[in-house]
Image (cartoon, rainbow, N blue to C red; front, side, top):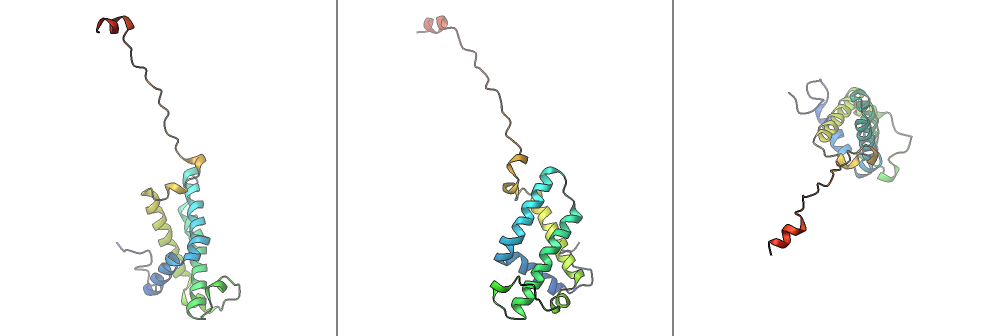
Length: 153
């Protein structure tokens, strides 16, 4: 079994790993896109309407934006504040072809599912879907009659 979703598919494994690591380690992408995707998918899992294939599609948008941002910063040398501008050279899609981005998206989805199963995203579950603690009735201790207590003194 391979470690990553792109291994054994005839893709450029170095480019795939580079894109994957870029997406995971870019602070702006994490805050602006990755965290909202995680929150959305956690809510879907909590509601019971989660679909793995659609999660991969959602992570595909993240992989596409990551590829564009990587290309813009590394190849064109633009500063980070201009990374989500619409005018991107089409070269980014040659650097990271669709099949490669899809494999990265599958890996992101697989990582999400593994982390979710471990309970690492429990803090993202909306309150209305969280399991509420079981309310237990307080059991009353049988009290001894006062007369018997007085007799022990």
